[in-house]
Image 1 (cartoon, rainbow, N blue to C red):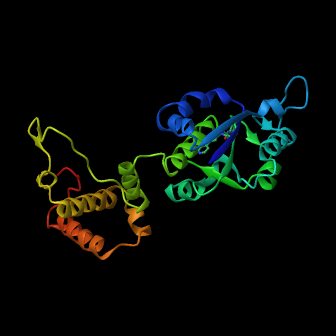
Image 2 (image 1 turned 45 degrees about the horizontal axis):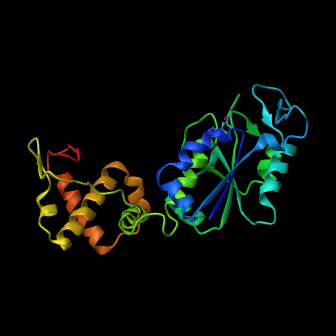
Amino acid sequence: MHFDILTLFPEMFTGPLEASILGKAQQSGLVSVDVWNIRDYAFDRHKIVDDTPYGGGAGMVLKADVLVRAIEAVQGDSKAPVIYLSPQGKVFDQQMAAELAELPHVILLSGHYEEIDERVRTHWVDVELSIGDYVLTGGELPAMVVVDAVTRLLPGVLGDESSHQQDSFQHGLLDHPHYTRPAEFRGLQVPEVLLSGHHGHIRRYRLKESLRRTMLRRPDLLEKKELSKEERQLLEELASEYSVEGRVNTNESD
Ligand code: 9WO
């Protein structure tokens, strides 16, 4: 898979893309990322990329002619979608990461401080994505978030074991708790079932704890999810745990 990233701050991308799993995925040729400086597509010798907004007001606006020249240069004959990272976009989630991971080529457009000319948004941008409801100084960090979330889904990027874990979010539930040695730490015990070696019991315990966390922290995810018979049964068990008369504490560790 190939990512092209258009930005005014290409140097922001160097560290995060080289480290760890993203770096290895590039080295092994599973993914490639090219970062392009929008300023290189300016038309004048002062390399001007922005201008004051029509109608007045604060801030500057990235110029349509420069942006479209940059987009068309990286696009070539590719059918890759142009994705603009902005707080006005549709909120990015695991489902969208999985859909993008099916594509051979994606173009990410990051504005910085300034908005883009609306004509670029309406005629050259295919998808507008937000990574959450907050404003940043620019779309660079969100572009890296998209590259990271998509790259880890590409075949061969993660080991076999970790791809099972990722499944758990893809099934629409939060992850279950994890423990490692020692079995007792400062009087705190690892749950007995995890030491039992009984894989059936362990699987059911983990599913139940995933459901518990999701119910307590993100009930919105449960409403979206289609539940299996086992999941419905475990949720009923959980519901009774939390509905015992007089018991209103929903602290997970309690
Ligand atoms: C800057 C500005 C200056 C003066 C008056 C109004 C202003 N609004 C902005 C502004 O919103 N700048 C944005 C910065 C323009 C688009 C790129 N920027 C951005 C993207 N901030 N936060 C994101 C973002 C993207 C995806 N998900 C979450 C946040």
